Image (cartoon, rainbow, N blue to C red):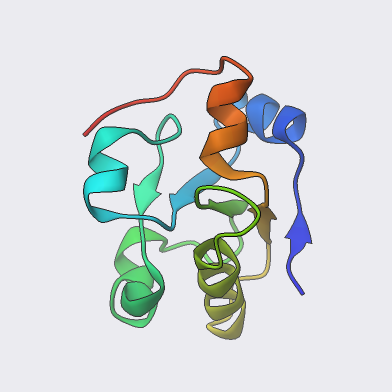
Length: 108
């Protein structure tokens, strides 16, 4: 099971630029709203795109999707771990929690 990260921990990591954030929703959801600096990577595209989007397998990576009920972030995190990424965590509460806390987002 992928380790979790809290909203406050993620906010601090985003602010310092010490993490790569992965939006596991993709598509129009990503275009409409995503966490600052997030890259889109959905479960079905991890094998094909991970090496190009996430070249450093040692880097801190956090996956997220919409909320705790959304399985995408866990699926992407699990696949990245299987591909040899060693520092992957999941923001279980997702973008809904981030927005509810009044934190900034970006659009594509």
